[in-house]
Image (cartoon, rainbow, N blue to C red; front, side):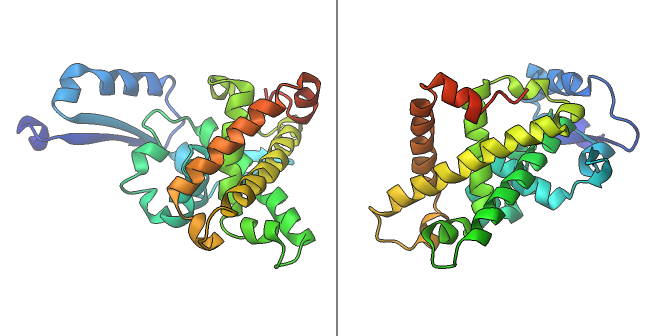
Length: 247
């Protein structure tokens, strides 16, 4: 309180262990968007036990999320797989607000983790089928899960629209139908990412391990992937079957 009285910029943390307060994100947003609070450099951040210890049922079993893995998945899903792969130590420090905005919902973090797990499954399956010398395996062994997850996130946004995340609930995310559809997205994302890296790396003299750590390279890859999806989506019957709407 002394810091507030003396005019210092402060970040107020609302931390509790009970059930998540109803509509708390709206109150946080109103506070943070108040011109007086902005001018005085005051930020209200909401933390509750459900975010760090989120649990959900998967195949009838209760599962708890690992916050370190959730951080990498969240960073990749939000479009920065290079941060998740190369600079993961920054996720909970200087890049925290970009990865976990003040109004982030537990359901959204849960969805990101489920998407990450599905991407891990399809990447592992491709690596297991190939040999270490295969180009696809070499690409996927360099942070493949995170880059495929970032690709999935972009494709899901293009396919389902900018507001689809608002409809997420725990029941929808953990359903068999959602997981089945996410696997289709993950397989499409894996193939699209590998193809984009192959195309771009042909014109570069740098090693693959160096290229995938460069944000500029990723930006070029995801632009190429987005253009490829737009072309694929012209075939309505194909896209409805290959990439059905998630929810």
